[in-house]
Length: 433
Image (cartoon, rainbow, N blue to C red; front, top):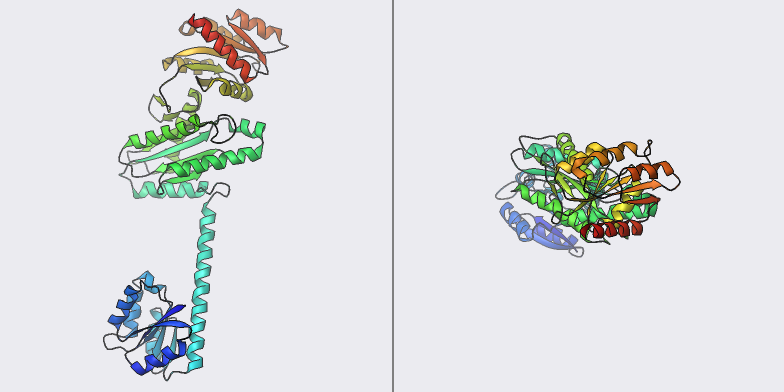
């Protein structure tokens, strides 16, 4: 049942109105402005309509309307002014201050009931429209597939946070699924979409409500942490995300699905999303080069994983399929570092990682792998590291170049992960004898 508050110092008029609406409303009565506000607070503003006499002992109806404008809880309750005459000046002042309608005394049952009904219908329709508008506004901010913020909203919200909190520590984390194209191509787009939704859910579950989480591309996500007391919190969050995907084999789809993360901090007055994102994106690219399933912080040489540093396997290949097969085969035991040039191999070596094996895919090189094999054979820094070559089965020249380059094993393309796992395991065992 709806609740009506009648505010009038005239007991007879209050009784008349109460009798008109007794069957449809729970009736509350006040004799003054002070009592009106007390009842509103007592009922926590859970009142559906107020009938307000314009002349009260302690204040006018207009005075109460002015106070109403200062409290949104009261402002949401419709108010009908009850007056003894059609004084235009007073009515205009009442409407200026938010009155929804007016009724004149003497009170006519049919008129007052019709006006109350009309005001309630209009108020509820307006509230419904406002609710739908809010829902539409929220939907326009969201990515339809994941329910995260879309790119435009993400950018705007992060820019606003950066502007409002210039002197606070903020961090942007860019999350990118490893080998997503391979998932789409091999498993189909339905599985790919499912994977994106699962990543979204994991991000929602592992960050605060006040953090900004958005999907800014196909398989790329952004998280902005604002006002964190210490940078180590963001680093720990990055490690946690890596760990969740790395440890839980069935997190997304069958097999192992991992993510790489780029991290950058908003400091030294950084107040622009693009500048901050570019830093994190560069860090993400470094994490991908390093071997994926890890995070890299912009401006820092170290790379973070969810666990202690492991032995690494360098994979030189220009084939996404071959890289993925090798990664699936051995990434549970070794850190797989994908490279496409000798310069990138040099960079990995300078990081002083423990490299156990180098796998060189010659099958897609125009020179049949001559340049890369010459580099590997003549580089003293990796002279003692066993090397495996991947060649096209029908390409005798590639096999010759690989053997002349000192490889300890050959695998023929296309390769299978079980074969890769067995070959790598056997070579490691031979090395340890």
